[in-house]
Amino acid sequence: MKFRNTLMLGLLTAALSGPAWAAVNAKFAVTLPEKSHQGQGVAKFVELVKAKSKGEIDIKPYYAGALGDDVKVTSALQGGTIEFTVPQTTTLTGMVKAYEILDFPFLFKDSSEAEKVLDGPIGQKLMETLPAHGLVGLAYWENGFFNATNSKHPIARVEDFNGLKFRSIQAKITQETIKALGANPVPLAVPELYTALETRTIDGQGTPNAVIAALKLYEVQKFLSITQHTYGAFIPLVSKKFWDTLKPEQQQILKDAAVEARSHQRQVARAQSDGAQKTMIERGIKVNEVSDAERARMRERVQPVWKMFSSSVGQDLVDQVEAALKK
Picture 1 (cartoon, rainbow, N blue to C red):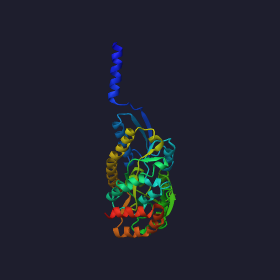
Picture 2: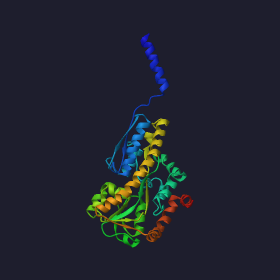
Picture 3: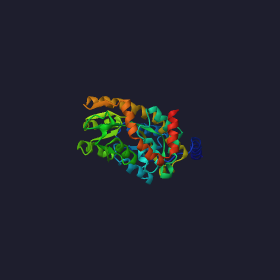
Picture 4: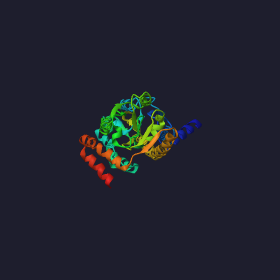
């Protein structure tokens, strides 16, 4: 009788406490080091997911490109062999042309403009295109404004890009932007970048200050020019194959954690950008600002890129973004 009462009590307790979830283990592929703004965002996300799920969802991050570059890892998510990654949105442009709008050169003047587009209806509309490609987007994080470094000379005018061998990612819009500015694009993945700059295989590259510092590119570059030619956004992604195995409550935990981690990650990104520029100056890299007038000239130079990609992105989407920015 005592055993029966104990059993009944145990069953009643389990029923009142709700259904028990099976433990979920997942891998999170991260391109940059753990201390980078990207890495810190992932660390916060993992911490929040563990707390919100009471330890039922255990995500292990693999930093510094340990599982491969963004293109390889995103493909692995589609196949279901890796569960999470957080590439720049540019990585998605090969499968969803509309994402190219975020890579239009000189689209945003500042971070607040970018947030208005990304965190609003336009960003959500873009995210809704991903499940058809085996991916689920959770939020938008900040990579930051891209600035140009090189080993030849300061870039103060658009003419200073002429002839430079400039690193590009595989996305066509990035390559066309580099061409329009007068440089020669050389496609390279992040893990190959340091060595290519060190051996002078390429002359320069464009990434946010925090990334330049995280990858220690100041060791192999002489000049940093504040061009702010592109704004980069990260997007935490989940494999849809993995996503579909989760309960709705677990899916909501992931969404909530990604949005909550967003504020932390953006704060880290901006603090690291400011700190990175100071660090690079201390390490001997020469920094120059680009005047508003010269940045306007650069923006004018890349207008053919806007025209080239407006048709594939969709003129309606371009108009929506411009209308949102005017407000």
